Length: 299
Image (cartoon, rainbow, N blue to C red; front, side):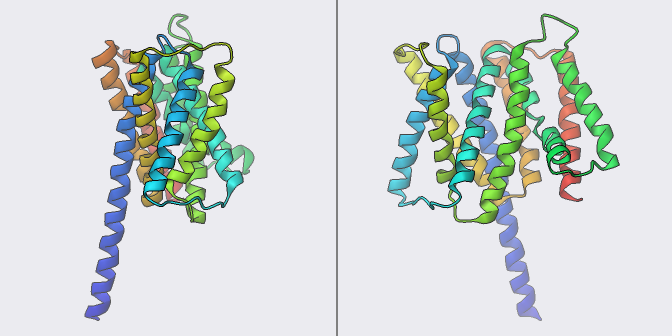
């Protein structure tokens, strides 16, 4: 009896430790991505998005291969189709958010990215033919209203195509999160392998975008590009490990810290002050998204 209790206690404590590790990774991921957005916004003043994506991806690939070689980490050669799909969609998501932060406040772009939970539910209803539970209707309506407050389409000066880029990034991000979770359910993949495919696919996306629109970066621009590569690399790795070690819903809760980080850095480095309606809309979007994620986990 005592032995079984000790064994049960040991495994429960071990599960808690693993879960906490995943949540720490989620927090670090949010922080890294917020730093990346600051560097992307600064670099976008003189560099094209395609050039930023291409150079960042090439640098990241070499760093990943070096890390894998030093750590004697091997490619699994499993689920290549899924890995490539994740890489393409993830590359598109990163490209879209890069475009978004170059033309709008960091805080607003970050809030719109949190629409992923909304899109996961909509995709499930349309493509998987899952019936929307009655308790999700009101949160979905609130999310739409919150998004409208952020976009403010009735004000010509506040509405821009950059906001649409952020929303599209949230949609592709929803696909990415689901794919990552599925990959680790199947097992056999390291986080470095998963993000290697992301950056490999991003190289081709960057090449396509920078066609006839590039120049040799200055020393300062190289510094920004290296910083983008490092923060993006570790942000992706931390996020992948977060979904590996912790519950998907809990990770998504912690990732909402990214909104705070982005709003803070936007104010500190660029003097950005979020509109009152954006703050209200952000609370509505994030609060409803958390509610939907919680209900989805307990259905």
